[in-house]
Every structure is written in structure tokens, then in C-alpha cells.
Image (cartoon, rainbow, N blue to C red):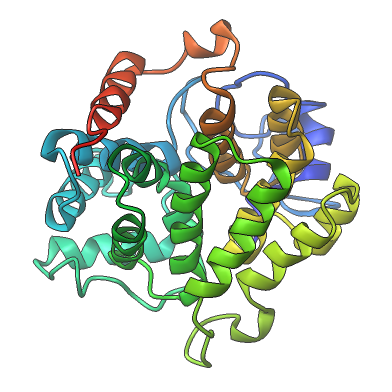
Length: 325
């Protein structure tokens, strides 16, 4: 697994990204797409998307939120159905699927298309970050209903719809916990302590059949953050990385959130400009920041968000489940 775009390439071709930009191919002076430069491969995903258009992170988060809101609870079959529908809605006439969905996610959804139960549709694949990037609505559900252990068990099941790597599964559980914790006003240190403890409790060892099994655990990275919370962003980036491997992108977003605890917008911009799987690190950071700080993003950005009203409506419906349990 590799970065979508390296931080050096962002700096070279865009300078510094400080607001939403459209997807585009990077061209040379002759009008040809640049596929490789001195920093390595120049990867292009989801070209043709406009400013504010969603990628896989937000697409699947919205599908999950819609299911919880409509069902007024969590139903794994309905969640799988709505995620598959959202995925299929991104299919182009060519047969390809827009949105930047990862290979493991695509394989899991293909199993759902074949009629395989969402309890058995997950694949070994790679240690992707899809469970974490879409799990914020489950954290909201936990906060609303008070069903903490139930909610974390659901987060594990939802992650397994596509991913079987134990680090990927754990990331979804930890993200659900993280959203719940931030909604309840934890301190920075309490946040880090609780994430490290939750990850250690839920993460199972990566056995040899899983890709990058010897590349370390998610728990080790989150524990490093807890013990090095005041490290520089450069040191954290060098230690953790920010590619689509979940042991990189998820803890990197966590580090940046706690590093910019009092400056959420600055932290989001910094996170994206570090490159790598930056739609995912940005989405995870944004979800965490929203749980902690509320709707703190500029109005100019919000005006670009498609279906913002529907998003808010689903969130209100999930919040409305409060005290149902």
C-alpha cells in the first residue's frame, strides 16, 4: 500500500492547500499527465471530482448514518445494504467505481453483491483504514443510547463487513469509542489514555496470513502517541507515516487531533498537507474535531458540501435516540 500523493508532491504542485480544491491531473508543459517525478509515482484518484465532492470516507459514513437514523438503531443487514447501494451509485458507465474505494472494501462489497451475508463478506485483504474512516455515526449512537459495549461490538461487526485484518477491525472500534469520548468532553490526556486502553482491549494479533503482519500493531502506535503527545509533527510523521495502511493513517490523524487540540482548523490543514491518504486522514480528523468542537469549519467550506441538510438531519435523528435504551 502506498500514499495517494506525497507531501513533497503537494508542496511542488499545489504549494499549500488551505481550502477545498477540485480533483485534477497534474500535467507537464506539453499537456501530458505527470505519472512520476523525483519523489516517486504521482498517483491520481477520482479525477473529475469538483470542490466539495465526497470520496469513499464520507460516502460510507453517510450510508452508515442514514441506516442508523432510519432504522432508529443498528441493523447490520441494513447497514450492509445501504453501504452497497452507496458504492454502486459511484459506478461509472465504464464499470469502474469512482470515489477512491480501497481494494479490500471493493472485494467485500463484491461479496455482498453475490448475496453473501455481511457476517461472512469480509476479506483478509490488506490492513486498510475503511472501518475507522466511516465509524463516527456509531460513536454518536453510543452517546445517544448509552449502549457502550453494545456499540463497540456493533463497530466490530460493521468493520468485518469488508475487513478481517485485526488492526483494521480495531481501528473502527477505537474510532467509535473516540467519538463517544469526545462528545462527553474528555481532556486531552484522558482521550489518549482511553484510546490506548480501548485499542489494547480490542486488537487481536495479526497472524501471518494478513498482509504486513510483521509491521506492528495499531496499539503500539497509539501508545506511542500517548507517551509522546508533545512530539513535533515532523517526528510523528517520521515515526507513524500517513499512507492508507491503517497503522499509519489512523494514528496519524489521532496524533494531529491531539496536537492541535485547541486549534482544530489549523490542525486539519496541516493534516491534509502531510499528504499520504489525506482524504482519509482529513476525514477522520474532521469527524473527531466535530465531536470535540462542533461545527467549527468555515461557512465557505460548508457551502460546498452536497446534501449538507440531509447530513445534519441524520445526525439529529441519531442524537434523538438519546435515552431510548
